[in-house]
Length: 102
Image 1 (cartoon, helix red, strand yellow):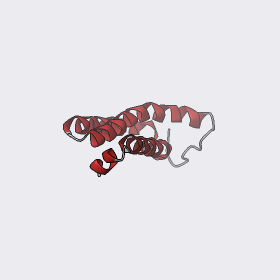
Image 2: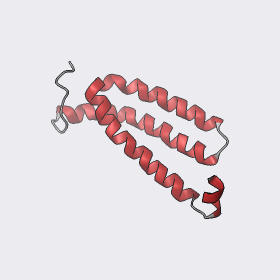
Image 3: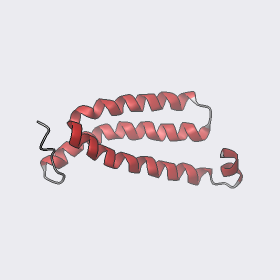
Image 4: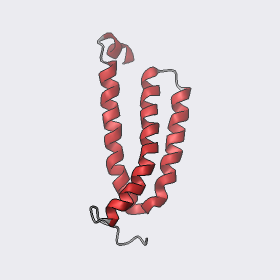
């Protein structure tokens, strides 16, 4: 598949599209994780980011290394977004989970 993308000069577009989808995946993930688990789930994203970062360094394929790197740093960015989501919930912009104690 990489050969096809490289032959038709679509590798950059493919990586860009996948980056867009990865970032788009993390937006609702932040909201759902915060709703169900609060800010205590931040360390999941740290572990996920470190694992993806290690995998990015370990693989030889430029495409997979790029996508794993994007995934890793999106995970790291999500840590800050989980805490920002807490503030958005306090402002009333998002609903708080009535079953979860603060």
